Length: 635
Image (cartoon, rainbow, N blue to C red; front, side, top):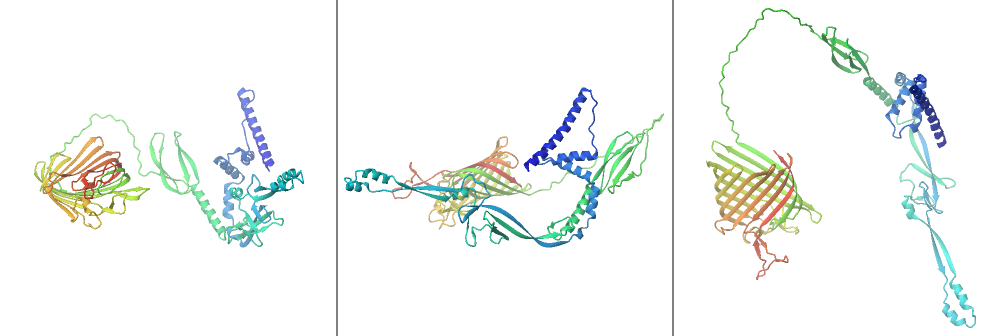
């Protein structure tokens, strides 16, 4: 078979070489101008034969195929039989005359076997580099107690020592042959064993319709399968059809493809004007739209001509209605009358626009941050990690310029979580804040102000790594502050609010499960109530282009208990805008409360004990920091 393919390729190459050589000779002669150039000409049959020889030579084409080869094949096929004849034969064929009857066909496949022993074989479909056997040799040595024999018979048989040595040197070799199962498994070959009436493991899956039988010489097996088919009658061009509806389906498929080709087929026409300009126009089927063309005469006058294509081989020409042709001419005029008209103008009375007051304004913003968080002495629990943070802010503002009053309400929910290999899912930031402030203008930049501030958390908090004891949860603790005072705004984005009369309540509702002393509340109480003064400073500045810093400082001093000990709550935000939806954010949060105590540790990290055995505690600064990329969304 390879020899036939080689000879066919060789003959095609020689024919192609002769034609190419003749063509090259003709070109060389043309260059020397010794013999006139003879153009290459083909008749239709010669051209068909030449292209067919190129198509059957697979060595000339790339293995992946090319559209050129397919196009040449279609060209040769249309030469042998025009498309009209093919269409006529397909459309005139009587598809309903095909008779179909159900029948059964059998097919079989023979596989060679390799027997490993009398009852074990493998399917010999994978070439093996070596025999699938291992040989094991065992050497057995006959041992004799030479010392006893020598002492007893030494005087009788002088040559006994040499004899004993020969006995000791006698060996017997046992040769065992094993099947190399590891080698067969590496080749993914399954061993099968033949029993009286079965093969284990079976060659076919359970429930298979195929059957297996050995050849008479057991050198192979035959796998047979009998399946149901639909046979067509001998007068039809088909042998096996997929189902009984196939002739009807083929008939309608041929009709649909024929209609599609009729609609898709098109003819390119060119419309020529008197100056020789050619305008292309495609003649196709199914085009109901008309196209406008400008037709000019010798005087360069033009009229509109509409050309339509109602059917594949039809044209419709329609002239534009109400067409008039006017030409300019020069006339000598002695006097040209010029008429002028001065319009009457007057000023209209203007009314000032009445401003429609808008009392309420709303705002909603959310951001999602992937950040790195660091904790130091944070009473609500947490650990340093890479985490995600969701920050949702909402605000409403009522402004009445006539009453010189403003009521501002805002809420904030921040919840962050981390996922670590050691501890799994844990929360590291959980805050709920509520602010309500009413201002009334007293004089320029000074307002009377009343404030309400509340703070708690949403979920349970743990002092990690101990996640079995809850240290905080919703309203445990909770802090509410109410104050009356003045607010001063020295700059547009800076406000100083001093509430000389303030009341702060810090409470823990569930003292059975939450240790209230961690938040400065006595053991026998659920709340700590304080009367004092509160100072809140808010400031927002732009340090560099796109870099903003926001400060919120809350200072509270109790009038009744340790007024010199000032509680500090300071939060700083640094934002760098990257684009309209993302920014880099650095958040620093510092809290110092003299009533919240932490264990004092020695240099070894162990708690310091008092003389009564209790742990020494002292107030400490609480710090929380995170840095991350924030995705912000505002409404």
